[in-house]
Image (cartoon, rainbow, N blue to C red; front, side, top):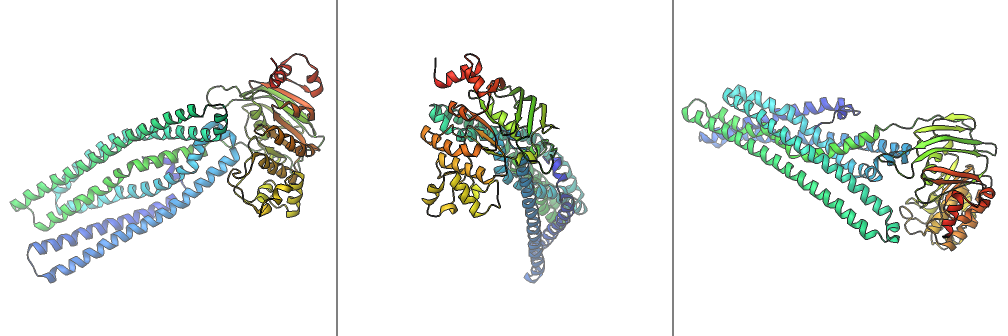
Length: 576
């Protein structure tokens, strides 16, 4: 029920003594509360004057208020700790996502990452609040009450001692069943999240291919499976709560029978019997509260476990380049026998035995059909993915991979679908150069061909765009990405992952005229399936099923009348 990693969290060791002290005080308030209430009831039973009842009644109210004040203080401390710790875990998770990036998403799935970063944090916060409070109450309060009852009546204490393990046994049996169901439910929830997020990201493509209804049925099937898992889990949770309530009620009833018989025989005074009967529900209350929140704590534990597993993933080790490293005309990059495989079964875009030599300000095209591994190779070059084997040599320096800070500060990246942040256009253009002046931004806007578009906006560069670029056309979004590159003039490597693939021919042609001046004095690595871009390239890498099947200068490959590039270009032109 309690994840051992919970005890390794910062500040938990100083929190426990504080919670334990407050819980002990709570237990004594419960005893005082029962003592004064029993005294008032006995006085009433003995028909004494009202003045005798006032004092124990006032003390009872004071103990009652003090008990709930201590509960409020404990909850406030727990809430502050849970909120701060959850925010720290969220920050660690986001930092992990930032440093590991596509490598992590390839292993865990984007839906899993989104679920843990959003809903998972709320579950973890709730888990900290519930488990620490309920656990502390269950470990301290019943035993203090039990010791007090033994002093009042040994028989009642023995009854409570004998009943408690039976309830714990049933709770463990049902708890294991609930845990297994909850684990299965959470796993199904992750599957649903991955399916749903993938469907949203690929909705345009699915509609274009006429597969949206078919995929909607797939989402329905996964959702239905998740619904069934949830109902199955709730059955176990409700059954466990019912069983626990039934056993505790039965135990209190058995105790009441013993106390009643003792009173009828005259073996016990009314006061200790009344105190014992009042404390019996309090004895079982921490256990009942723990069981009532069992399902909620399971959800939080699963979210905590999933998040900690992500945080435990190995972070790519940095091997820093020279601090003044800059890609220049005489710079070189060699990839030798690079292999990369995504988690799970082998996929067509897994890379196998990739070897390329890159020099200076080359213009390199990576061509191949969809799924050939073009984007994966770009992710390896950018350092977003870490190869399982192979050798990387940059300017004569051997590196385990290209996930190096100084290398990644040398390139700008234009993906198929540009991502704009929910901010002003000016700040989106400053993505690579946060401190750039307004004059530099305006110059980048002119170079990217955005001047007329910016003038048409009432707020100009201060116009806010929606998350992901909502409210901006695909062509204008790509121009904003180009403006980022023009502004980051100190970066001399351009990585393009089919940036015009989703644009119409007219928009692509206009964008191309804007992009070409950017190629000067830059290493350009351009993944594309549009043949007209090859006219601006020096070198071509032809990929099939994750391998480079042909490579060479553009003029050489264009003259070939057979081979992979010839067949690919014929296919792209639509030739039979």
